[in-house]
Length: 123
Image (cartoon, rainbow, N blue to C red; front, side):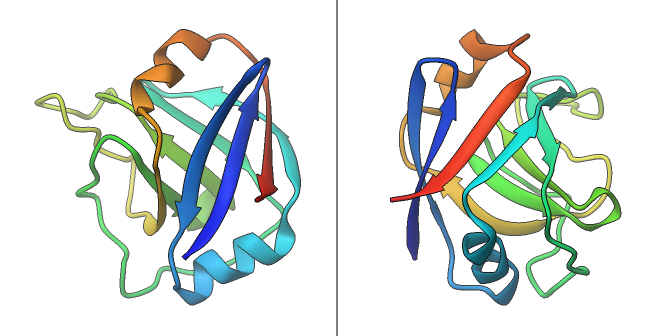
């Protein structure tokens, strides 16, 4: 696993990327700065990585998961219900590759809504 940090405004959130080919490609592209889009309690943002669905692709994600969404070349951070949720679990718009997880409390993202810039760096 590769350690990363996510910086939004003055908050630093620790996370890790798994040892999948998709996650490794993302790690190699770091640092990445992007503009945040919000979809319920999910942040997603375009990254300079193009990758298809892999054996981790799913619509069953948990709070704290980090996914890669192939149709949008986007990284997704799940921290609560999305518009497609029927419970407290997030549900992505379509399948995402599970590439990592937040190792700090994902609740911190709820206080960062409305902020438009994100930076992801290697640790």
